[in-house]
Every structure is written in C-alpha cells, then in structure tokens.
Image (cartoon, rainbow, N blue to C red; front, side, top):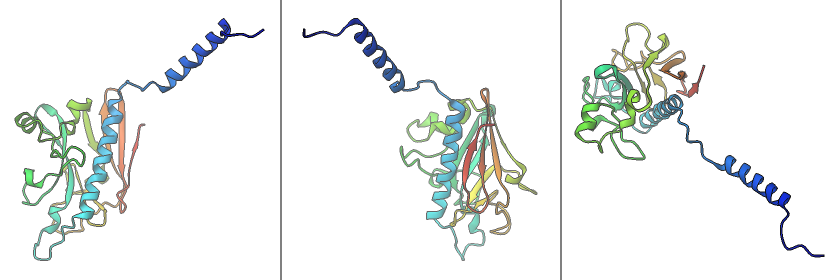
Amino acid sequence: MKRFAFTMLELVFVIIVIGILAVLAMPNFNRHPLQEAAEQIASHIRYTQHLAMVDDKFDPADDEWWQKRWQIHFENAAGGEKIYVIYNNLEGDTNEDDNELARDPLTRRLMKGTDNDIASDPTKYTGDLMISKAYGISGVSFSADCHPSSATSSRLGFDNLGRPYYHTANSAPYDDLLIANCNITLTHSDGTAVITIRPETGYVSVTYP
C-alpha cells in the first residue's frame, strides 16, 4: 500500500534538523567591543605602514624630512577620552591639520578622532577613532620599548621600507628605529588586549591575555 504523507516521527525529525541548521546559520549579534577596537587599531597600524611605503618622505633638500613620515598618534582628549589620529607631519608642528590627515579607504573620511571636529562636520571625520566613546576603551598604555630614552609621545611612524619607529621628531632620521617588540595594551571592562608591533618588519598581531 502506498503512503502519501509523512509520519509524525518524520515530521519531528525534519523540524529538529531545520532548527539545528537555523541556529548554526544565525549571525552572532553579541558585540565584543574590546576585540573590535583591537582589530581596528591593528588594521589602522598596518594602513599607516602601507601609506609610508607608498609615500616616501625622503628629501635631501629638507634637513628634517623624516619628521614628515606617516604615523599613528594616540592621544588623550578632553575628559580623558582615548583617541588616535593617522597623519604625516608636513608642517613639522604639533597640530594635525586636515591636509596632513589620512583618509579612510572605505569611507574617505579623515582619520582623526576628536569630538570638536566631528561635531562641526560629522560626515568629514572618522568617529570610531574615538575609541573610548566607540568601544569603551578606558586605557591605552605603551611598553617601554615603544618609547625608550627621552621619547615620551605615544606614537609610531614608518619609513618607506615599512620599518617602525617609536618617535619621529629626534635629531637624526634613523635614531628612532624600533629594535624590540612594541606592545600597546588596551584596557576595557571586559579585559585587556595587547597589540604587538615587531621591529624591522612592522608585523602586527593581537593577543588577549
């Protein structure tokens, strides 16, 4: 005798299989802000290195040409807000003017995280560089090898070979070459993340101790 319908057992089995597949295919909507911030910063460090390699700042007519290398600079904004900016110091001063800023390759917005600039033109600047506000990062600390001797600024620059430098304002172009791992530790209520930049190659990795 022919059957033209499923049995109850077969229907239950199909429903269970469909449920399992739906759970596996369902996207994860839980945010991991510490990981998002760490991966973003690591990506932007690599982008800074890329900019330096395609835009060689060597100029024999300029006695301080190396100060204009592409760099990523971490700062404390008003109220302790943790921000960073990617720029090349064309004018040799402490200001990061619009003509010196990198542009986000996806959005074409200027890569500078400050409340004042973003409030004046929210479509012009990259808001997620304000990592305290965007991801809840409460602290950014650098290991001693990131700024040995007299250098105290929390910044990294790169030359046209992609080699990392811990500071870009000393008296000689190669004095600041990174010679040991530079570790940048991000602090968040969920824990910490460590971004490591290796000397010579500038290779960037992220760990979650």
